[in-house]
Amino acid sequence: MQKSVFISPKKYIQGAGVLSKIGEEVAKIGKAPLILSDSNVWGITGDTIEESFKSSDTSYFYEEFTGEASNTEIDRLTQAGKEKNADVVIGLGGGKTIDTAKAVGDNLSIPVVVAPTTASTDAPTSALSVIYSDEGVFEGYKFYNKNPDLVLIDSKIVVGAPTVLLASGMGDAMATFVETRASKKRNSDTMAGGKATLAGQAIAEKAEKVLFDQGIAAYRAAKKGLVTPQVEAVIEANTLLSGLGFENGGLAAAHAIHNGFTALEGDIHHLTHGQKVAYGVLTQLVLEGYSETEILRYAKFFKEIELPTTLKDLHLENAAYEDLLKIGKLATAAEETSHNMNPELTPEQIADAILAVNELTTANL
Image 1 (tube, rainbow, N blue to C red):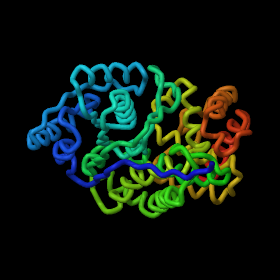
Image 2: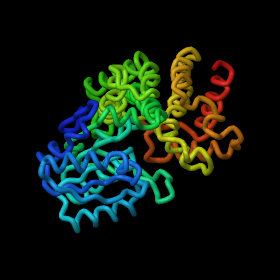
Image 3: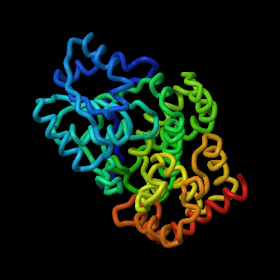
Image 4: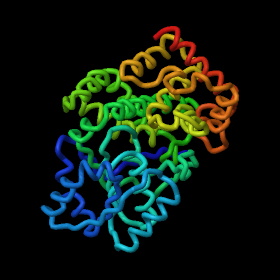
């Protein structure tokens, strides 16, 4: 039986200063929250969090997240939650912290609150986590029965983060409609567990439109620490529209190629998720046979917000063809999302498309 499915978080709150309301909002969900965050994020937000929970007459437990969304870290923090009898878990920070919090919440069967401090990925709203090894190599996806109970994102904190993270979020979000469109052509299942709804497709398309219309202005404003209507629109596109769009519209080759990049050692490992996805978008467009004009429309946008468009930008200018085949092999593995677009893709085709992007952008940008 063919079915269409749409899933989403229960509540989404966005705006400058809204982190000060987290205690009040969490108190509606649980009384013994476990907060997961890395030490840098806690240093920036800890005072606001503490004051907010004091005002709401709710206490919390804090556990430091050590940086990798791995099964080892998930198990450690699940145990911490058990010991504290936590009845809600809060993921405060970036994508890997958030993905870990969702896994802990699922293990303990308790509500999940997500408080992103960047707009760098579309992880916050989804009912899945991307799991890595302890060394940071992509291992797979973990799916949950429900989306987060609350997503709360403070625009002022987002613009206080390095602007490369907002740009990375745009790279990730720009993949949304590109991949949804490709998945729809094959009538592939989405991450939501069915066929794409019209709503999912429309949201994915809206994410792309917001980025092309307002992304560059938002990037420039954020560089100055300003919260403008363009910045608010892009934060929503990166977080809510992209999150709902990818989950309900479908993933394809761009994210599979990102996952393929994790097979390599070296400086590429230090690039953000969205930086690698951006190059994956261009590679997917080549694989789909789009025109040079259309591919360059995306590449020029990425160039304006300082996302990678060449192999040099990825620190792969000296990579051997065999290295690119490793990327292709991982990107076409049995469970990869590239099969949503074309199940017959080969590692050689991926490697060739990666090189073709570099030739096109080097000659034209």
